Length: 428
Picture 1 (cartoon, rainbow, N blue to C red):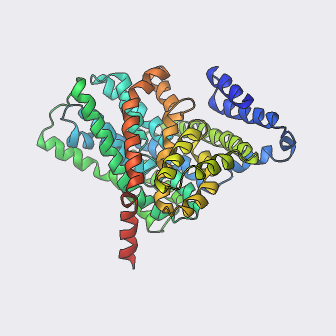
Picture 2: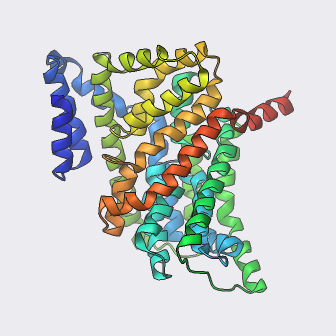
Picture 3: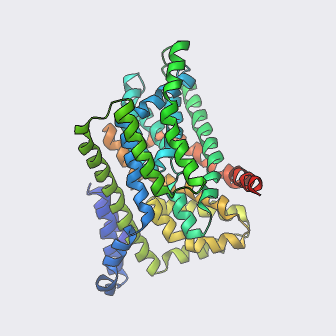
């Protein structure tokens, strides 16, 4: 109880989230008389949380996104998406979703994607007559697609912890990701039936060809990243480095939008964003470790297993626990804390671990955009200067339809497993 009170007081006072996580960890250690941990392992936990080679992919893929933004590559993708869906009512909202789906193959992180797309798409939508809170909600919804499409940082971590092939996890997220894009698009259509949404400008056939052609080169970056990883040519980190170099060459030499004097600010933005994410990972991991030391996650999962014999209802309860913890902990920390306990449980229920990986990935990103510590929610608030209540209220319809999609994914494992199984059949 003391831990929760300390956490909420610090959070509501406006102090940075990592401080709330850090002091909540201290409060938990004090409350349960674990002060001997200060001397022995506290510093090791903070350092060990970041001493992982896979985390190097995060700044590299953030650099890709930054270079694509500065180099005009993201704009090319937006213009191409506008050709496909921009003319219909609410067209720019659909463009937002479609661009997020294409860009997610580059970023692979919901937080990073929301950060970049909110600074790109929200001002454009507001300028064209969309309400700012609706624009923020659509951007947050699209940002959730990042971890579903490869390369996904969360799926990489799941594969490491659960001893599952990362290439199969990457493939498993594709169809559920497309399905959720459809659901979000359906929600935009439903909202458009009750609220007046602007239409895009008419685009001539010649202009459409030019825009679609201009998106070919930027589109090769996410395609090459996926192929390099799936073919085993590179690791995700190496693919991020290659994609960064490619984005720089295209933006600097082909489109000539990146100037030498901008490189310092680009690297500074990436370093600042990386520091923000990594300090959240470190402090969230510390809190997760403290909770795990006292056996709190074990108690939660054991209680869940004792509640039902049905695999479906166990999956629903697992959804609930992952989402609840995701409201307080960083997504990676949720994985680290819960997976070692949940994996044996899903084996006893006969649940496919690849399918479960997709489910856990979807569930963890819910916490990114929900109070009290949703990083994506705070990023959107900062970029729009809106209050939390305004942003979250506008996002509720997308959250509700996401819940529907999560239930369908749980009921229909083939949605996750069809592409990996088909790929394995072809390789034999």
